Length: 352
Image (cartoon, rainbow, N blue to C red; front, side, top):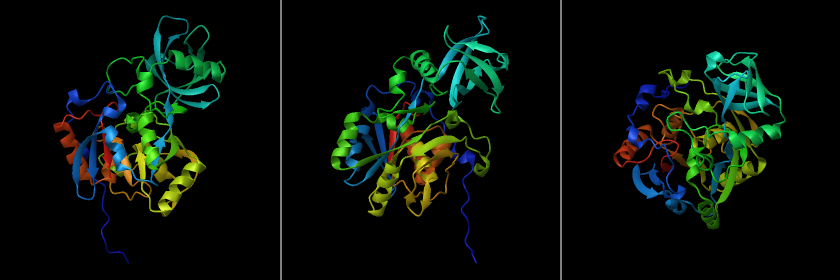
């Protein structure tokens, strides 16, 4: 018979924190590896201040570095409605089937089922349905290759809603990791944006093995939590894939008691989704709506690289579950005092 107490999750309001507007990074740092790096040590509850390029010294031979290789596509497009001069913003969220897309449109009230949206002389689509989240289902009349070529050339980078400026041509490259190679996200796995190819090579030279997973990040990553009781919040589902070679690398490292460093909350959620028993994972693909908040017993990640996230966000809660919540909140306050840059284009945190 069990007589212990079950630790309850903290309330939403306990994750509140005021981040000065001037610390919200709306542009990337001049060089990826020169972002600031705050190192949180969970053993002695200490905080160190470094540059991201110093991260190499926190790896040892035989360890594994897990990266999310999802690629952000320029999802924001503009169209005319039914041969009129009325401009419509079309934000492509995900491809449902061949030539069938879920999208958000603005102004939504003026885009109805049966409308035709004209993106160019060659590229058009029909509005064929509404979605429960207020979006639209669009059917394009063109082959996938032609449509992707148009999106890549004419689409704008889907910057986060807290970045108020217009997208720049340089955002297509900088709002992206250097190892992105599987198209599908409308938001970047931002913790990985600090890595350069040289940094990754330096880490590999130590004897660290790189393992890749894919999780296509949707707009749900910016979705606010509207309930005080975290157990009542529902995450949006996102597609993930863990290949066999990644599962093998991680399982072998765990068996040898070598540490696994995971880059970003999206990669952590993916690995925790595919845990099968104890400290083993399986190769798998599918959809996950896993929501991680304190208290949580992590099976896969020994170290976490992440950014400074929006207060009261699901991302901040995962980080607070990985480290002591009060420790994380103190670290955020320290970051504000030290003028760290926050959010997607901001600085990084390593939790060991």
